[in-house]
Image 1 (cartoon, rainbow, N blue to C red):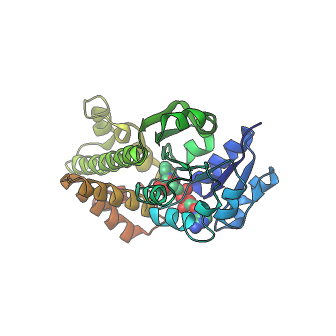
Image 2 (cartoon, rainbow, N blue to C red):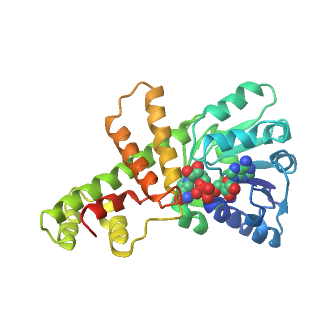
Length: 295
Ligand code: NAD
């Protein structure tokens, strides 16, 4: 029989991930600030719990998929937090895009309880969560990663479940992926808009870029769908993209690396967030350039 998975955070990502765990036969105990987010899961046999503590006490392992480090901290700590609910020797996997501070704090405060703590953030967007095709970057103990592989495989692409290093390495890999992704977005929107303003046909420019060494996912796929269909990916809020960029710049600062470009990209995303609102899609910065072109 499958171990019982406790899952906290049933948003754009967690909703798809829990559906796939349930389909793979893992009994679930779940909670969220929004109870309605669990109705389908409960119909499928999941148990609702009122607090993170209750989730942890009723599960063989626990997964969190929460917006920011602050939310992870709130769920972990306090009298109703998951840390007091975890049995000695228990397992907690944080799959949020975050930084190591919270898990490091728990590690220090619970030494001797034998807890297994892993960071395992993901890529693949809400569609990847729904399809069970996430890429997963796991930081932690190799034995834990092997033991938990069936759990990861229920949510992710088996070929792309990567053990990337010790505690915190998963968070670092994920933040660097998002940093490069968002840097590509801005760089691509910028050159497309200058090319078009200089009189080149957008389709011609795109085809030339696709055939060139400067091709990238944004050139060949995403900016096409954005410019053609106005799809800015509301499945990932720009407020969360700004959170990732802030954490990326913080990480650079904490290790003493200068990151001029990353800082600039963060500011451009913050400008788009201020202009279009927290819930606008992650690719909304493209609109800043579309407006300059009068599109
Ligand atoms: P979301 O805002 O859609 O969902 C977060 C959920 O957490 C919400 O349902 C919210 O009610 C719940 N929550 C918040 N605080 C809580 C608390 N104290 N107790 C219980 N539940 C609480 O966010 P999302 O898009 O699902 O993203 C989750 C994480 O995954 C973020 O760290 C994000 O950066 C990362 N991520 C998102 C995507 C994407 O495409 N959406 C892709 C990769 C990674």
